Length: 159
Image 1: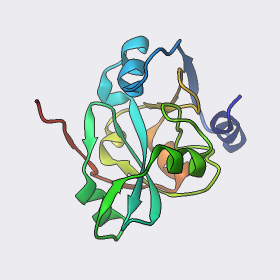
Image 2: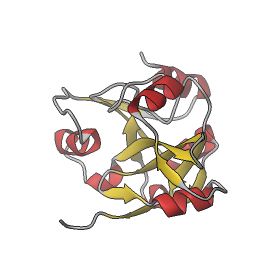
Image 3: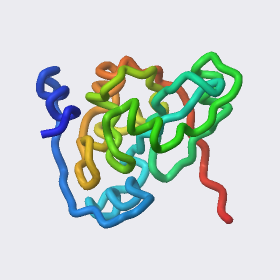
């Protein structure tokens, strides 16, 4: 059991656990969608970003989209946003990259949930380790994380 699952159980909300064997060295959310046979817009990634070079925040958005740094900075009442280092992300959340869950983190960080999460009956987020996804309603995730729901993603441009 991971801290994310323990947190959901103690909160008494409905959720489902989905497991698969993970072999990815990056692109964990896309791997989860493929392995579970899900559309990528229902599988959400959890990213740790820095606002104004010092304050860490959580951004939760679909795996088929990119984080809009300007939108995140604005939502977090900051001027600039940038990705946190892997070390900072792991230290703050207590999870390893590819398994960072928005739930049950070591340190409560301000959380920003992409507004598209509320367009689906349920979404999938990391359960706290690679190969472990939790299916939960977007509104339950918003409530449990005290998340601000706002558009923080943008389409990934083709190279």
